[in-house]
Image 1 (cartoon, rainbow, N blue to C red):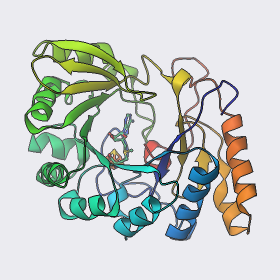
Image 2 (image 1 turned 120 degrees about the vertical axis):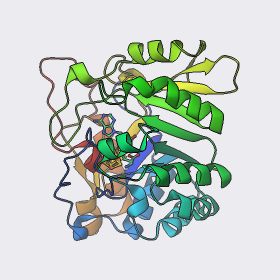
Image 3 (image 1 turned 135 degrees about the horizontal axis):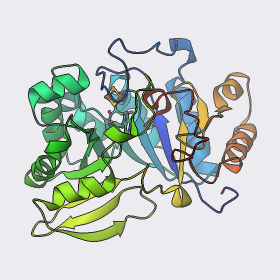
Image 4 (image 1 turned 60 degrees about the vertical axis):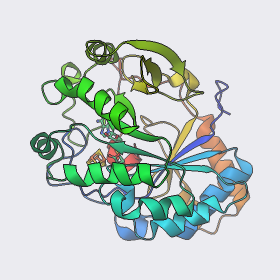
Length: 325
Ligand code: SAM
Ligand code: SF4
């Protein structure tokens, strides 16, 4: 628990900072200077940290992310080891969906429960322009495979950007309803590696709802537990749509998340400017008590909220892809 009474039960675990796409709102066309391989936590190190987290620190949910988590070798084995822990965390993944068609069943059998697939457009040329790769068909196949493998729910995450894909908001909702996926929109945040984020290009939650409202009638459902998405029932369907309004309606007051980067740095906030070096502890021979103490101290130092909307806002040194979104 932190100083403000928030209890941190949800771990976002980045498995790599590398990615096979280059989404324009995330990283530059040439990619980034990837973390050196020897700095990335190995499977044994990850399993140990998650064991300490579930045994001693109240972590109940782990979401695998990146970079692109599916590019990590041996992912089904790692998932099987994490879900064999006692207590075992509920395990989910956020992925761009490339390669999911091939591995969805293996991931499900290894113990993965849920999946979020990022998809910003249904148009192939536009997909290629946004992600700088012509891979829409792979993502759509990945979504279908996840659904067929019994990953439930399959959520689709989209980041609307003005003048890029904001005219597709209602189309994406219709696509999700028709296919049994759950649509969620995320306000774009100043976490791209290039520092090119512009407030005017962010499509606000209010605008997103207006666009959906032009085609669908919505009934508010509220927030699911401490989830960042506010949800609306899409009348006449058994579907809901969610909006994550990190910028215009921050949910810091109920945040229950802590993040571990692929190189073993614990962060108490997406926007934190400080990190706790758990990798150094592990590789220095620290025992579980010391890891637990460092984790508690990191959470103890968590700020009340992010300051995106204030003059003093300072971007974290790492972009989203190296933190784990
Ligand atoms: N590669 C995976 C994927 O794209 O789903 C996982 C990592 S990605 C950083 C996680 C999520 O962050 C994706 O849904 C992506 O759309 C979102 N994202 C990336 N950059 C963002 C930004 N600047 N603002 C808001 N969301 C962003
Ligand atoms: Fe890769 Fe995900 Fe960033 Fe796109 S949003 S470049 S898929 S890490």
